[in-house]
Image (cartoon, rainbow over all chains, first blue to last red; front, top):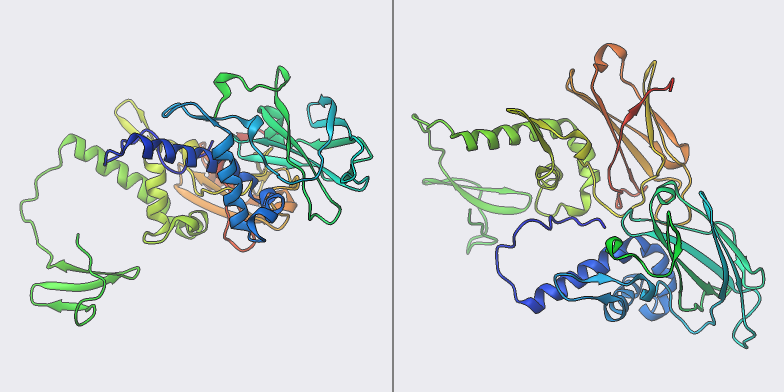
Length: 199
Length: 213
């Protein structure tokens, strides 16, 4: 991931263990979520009371609470526990994932639920925190279609990436909690990220 | 050096006794009179190396201060963009080639930010200059069609740095570099800034490819 500061530079003042651990957590969370700001501004807007930066702050807080593992100085983010969207809307169930050289395709199904509407739109996001690049489906896909495809940006065709899926209502007022599809690399699709690739 | 915000009579400008009041980027400060050292000692070897590094990087960044203003705008509060760029690049900007210290051109960065780079960047020599191409799509996140791409080319032999801009959706730009001034060693970089100039991407170094290949 891209940091503006130089990690190898020693700090002038010695700080407490707790302070350093919290700072590292915040830095990791910020570096992970920052490239997804435009998505989070929409998906977390309800939790930010209509304010985009508050929405980002809430997403950041949730990530720090739920998705950071390990002890300082070896802390990392568990991408399967990151929520890039949040809400009460029922999500979809993934049936099949097809990873091609230039696209990622997902077949899904949806259970009957009073809250689930056929016109709900499904969004697929492919994201690499190391490259700082993400891509989402260009065409609108609805819950009843059962199929979604995202064209991979050139940077993601050569590097491993994470994929997330979420649903929102047609009015974009209600969102579901995002579903982690998996970690896509040359070996195929893995739900668990290899230890050497951890952020 | 100490700075003061507002004295009892406010900040002052000009010479008062042996001190001079001055301000730079809204920072008020006092400086002493210039001392002329007649017998300035020669720098040690380590100092000479540092001086050389400072000179190399400062001279390189000098002609493109305006581009750096855009590339590092988010990080300039009490420093100039050139100084921020200098600090950001200093640690990785040099390579040692025997006794010589040279700039590590592929590692140099002209911007820092979270806007998305284009991907699939290529640069090739053509008759009227250097043609830089990139993927014009935005993939729905992190970039817009009207983002401005800053393509920068540098010829080592003629010490000439040129910058040309184009919109992201155009997908290409030609940097006018005539054959006579190109020289054998050329370097090309590309970064993007949004239409308001507030968000910028990282800088991508693009190796030159042979158009015939």
